[in-house]
Length: 335
Image (cartoon, rainbow, N blue to C red; front, side):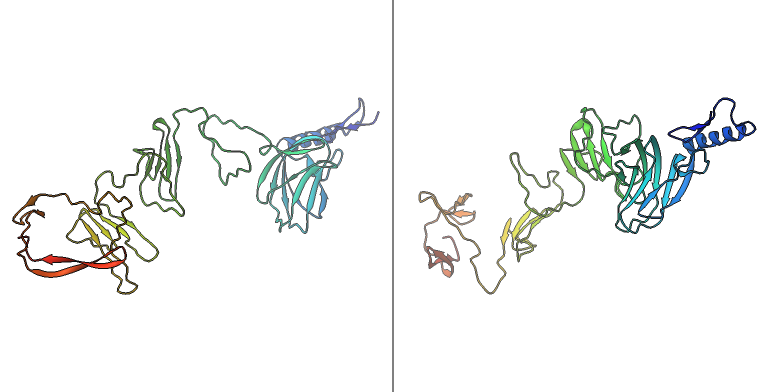
C-alpha cells in the first residue's frame, strides 16, 4: 500500500512495511515539517498580483508549512497571496511596499483579510475564511499590565475605562509632563497637568477655547484663591475691552492701566466718536444713577447736603438726554 499525505502539513503517512531503507529519511522530513509548523520562519518575495505559497507533499522546503511568514516585495497592483484551503494558523509579517494597493491573504478559493503594510498579523483559517485574530477577537481581557508599542486605533464602537466604577485612576503622559491628563477616580475629579485636582476640573496652565463656553447652572469664579492674577477680555479692535488688575484691585474698560478710581473707562479714539457711557433706563419709575455715600453740609464728605448757591461756576460737562445735548454745571465749592 502506497504512502498518503496529511491534509494540513503534507506529512507523508507511510504504509506498513513500505519504504524499506528510506523510512528514517521520510520520518526525519516529517519531523522537520512539524518543527516548521511549530516555530518555522520563511521569507517569501511576492512574484505576481495572484501569488500562492508553495505546498508540496513530503517537501521540507514548502512555504506554507512554516508558522511565521514574512512577505516582501513591492506591489504592482491589488495583490492576493493564497494558501491551501485547510484549517491552520500563521503569523504574517507584511514587509512589502503597498504603493497604495491592497494585499489580501486568504485560503485558496476563500475569503481573506487585508494586511497592513509594516504590521504583523496573527491569522487563523477555518479552511474557507481567513480571520485576523486580534481584529476579530471581540472583547479582550488583560490581567496585569498591557503594553502596546505603536498606535491603538478604535474604528467604531466606544472606549470605556473603569466600567465597573472602581477606584482606578487614569493618566496620560505628555512629552515633558507626567500628568498631562489625569482622572482621580476616588474623588471624581479630572486634572490637566496635575495629579491632585482640587475640583471637578482642575487646569494648571492656560486654557484656550475656539467657540462658545456655556455655563448652565452654578457660578463662575475667577481667581478664587485671591492671587495677583489679571483678567482680560478682547473685542474686535480693543485688546483690553475689559481688564481686571488683580494686584491693584482695579477694573478698566478700554485700558490696561486703570488709574486712581476703582473703575476706569477710557474711550481713546479721537475719530468716530462715541459716548463713553450710555445709560438706558427702561423703567420710568426708577432713577438712572443712584449715589450712596456719607453726606455733610460743608462739602467734606462724598455727598454735600448744602443748598447754598454761592459757589463759583468753573465749567460744565456735556451730556445727552433723549438725543439732545445738555450741560451739567460744575461749581468750585459745595457751599
